[in-house]
Image (cartoon, rainbow over all chains, first blue to last red; front, side, top):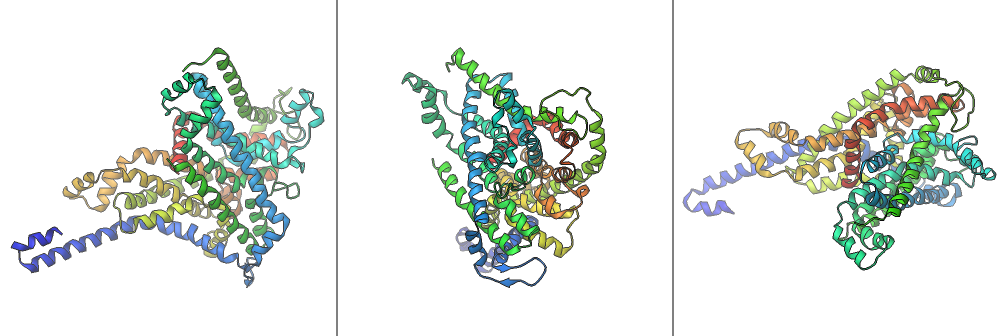
Length: 312
Length: 274
């Protein structure tokens, strides 16, 4: 403490008061600092943290949103696990992860690699801009556009017929077997460009000498991709996976507009089911139990991705 | 880097296919929108008599001026407010290093992975209770709150890198806490603030679930919310639906074409920092 050193030639009383002045000022600064953080904390507390706690509380009650609430313990959670339609939404969410996440990231990696190698000029700029376009339009619009393309008389069937594959035409979003993959294709359309452009920016930072060394060793493009590009892009790939996995598990807009969860429950994901349970069936408790499970699920899936991608 | 001629052509063909996959849906709805209202046209056919009037009709039945005004009002309420309070909080955590800053940061970061469907039901109950349900405020307030984890995190990343000497020099010159923040630090944060502003504007314009659940009147919703309602009304009239969708997309598309570089950079930075 520097003030103790100074106390040799100054009266003790003065030291004490100097210290308290210093402490008082620090306390005042801390208070002013907290005033800066307060508005953000307040709005975040009221409209995010409080609803989060309420969701957990509701999940232990049977409640229609208007009448009295009845404590039911873990019954709502048991119901989610027992009713196939409810548990099915979580299984559907994982299928969407394949479409919204694995395919865009894999295909994005290949696309970024191609753009990096053969298209850096004006063609490359055009490709980047165009592929990125679906990322800025509302997901609702993506749902409407593809709802029409995938319908019985839409573009997809027309192209199949033109290719002589007329036998395969169908109403893709209304068919039990194809509805979920069809919704998945919409996700690929929205997320592919985002992944490709993000991975491309990562690739431009990789040291060229590494590739030249690999070439001398006789590595082909695939081995280069797997032994140099993917490990060095680990962080960017992690970001892509995080963003797209959340988009898949928490999907709502696209599914609501394109299928509404149907046919039957073929495309019902947790987001849709929570909406239906709460706002049409008035089962607030059950909706909340599913909501809690969804939130836990997202954290459980995201944490390992974050761990892996941040390791150096 | 050695790239063979064959590889160049194979790559260009692949990219062209992907570009076609991206752009064909837009072309298809544009051509569909030009067909006579109420018909079910082919996906990619130039109409015999292009019905440009469909756009006029869609403009009228979708109440476009009202929608534009509503969406703009919401963006103008959400973005400046969210930027201001997030910047203040990011400054307190990143630069002032207030006691408890770490805990506060963790509390905000925790919200980054929170899916909106998880908390939408209590937000609805809460807004009914305090009487802002079915007003624009019903979208504005939760949206500001939902942006806080990302926005505070983003601004903190900027303020952490600002040198302490800067503040000390300003303090010696007699600046108080607010002047120091507002006159010295905010002007220096222009770049991260611009990117964040672009991101929040796009996300607000495109917000659907909050609008769907919290505002019944489509004329008080965001653009995406209004589009959802429009689809509900005109789902069977495909040409009109396509014309309406294009009109509602148009402002976004125009802004994207003008600011594409900024927007792409902002969205990528947003993903990487988040």
